[in-house]
Image (spheres, rainbow, N blue to C red):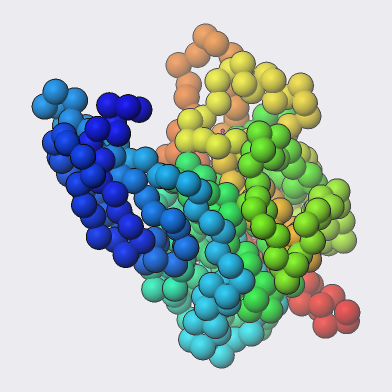
Length: 352
Ligand SMILES: O=P(O)(O)O[C@H]1O[C@H](CO)[C@@H](O)[C@H]1O
Ligand SMILES: Nc1nc2[nH]cnc2c(=O)[nH]1
């Protein structure tokens, strides 16, 4: 660290830079200044080290990014509301390769993430990076065609901040989808796992999207997390899959989010199985925690895109291409499931 600190550039929230001390400046990587200006950061240190002439770029962030205050979330929500006449009460977050649902919306208004004030941007294949607001079978919905992951470099609160934007726009129920590895030996590739519970690994390690000062306008300091996945919505979904003759491929189970971007070692998977995990992914939990904190009803499912590899002597490896390919094959069923569920959710919502 000390050698890094010999070669420092300080970048203040306005984005201007200056050389802090001796050493060679190799390259200054600027990220969008909007990112810095809206976060209330105290500033960032960008450390640029020259290792004896070899090109080496490092970045050090001093302090912690402060979660967006209510007013910043409100600004994003108002921007979206002013750009659409739809008033959705149902939100959807589309997982890897599952964004096709958003293309089914009628009378849709499309907002690339980079056009929405204060929004992060998607950087992962299979995540288009657009908010799509429109009608699905006549029901107004807003769909995130792409989400944000911790491994992209985003803090957990930022991964989940769009859920708060949805809340301030009037969303009361949310469907969260993801691609995941099947750890339960009874699961097959292509199965759909209705999530009944999760294990919040980051929470075990002291991190949470709710870490920091609590704003009661969003929710309580200590939200309960049993019943995170609404039983009525799960029962509704089970009836729908039975009507669709999909019961054979539908499972129910426990999801765990790991930080990624590595897939798991055999030993890690064995450990996770012992503690009751059925499917492994790198998302969803922060979004669900934030949705429950602000009182939304949650339904979530995983598409099992690969079987977790539990043997040492194999050349098989998990890979993102397979994840996208399997998602593509199952997308029609998943879109129909989501569509039918949304119609029923809207009816329940109207009946109170
Ligand atoms: O959870 P979603 O976004 O569906 O994507 C899953 O698939 C990717 C790995 O292939 C990871 O991003 C993992 O989280
Ligand atoms: N962590 C993790 N995420 C995934 N997303 C899709 N498949 C997997 C997997 O096997 N492990």
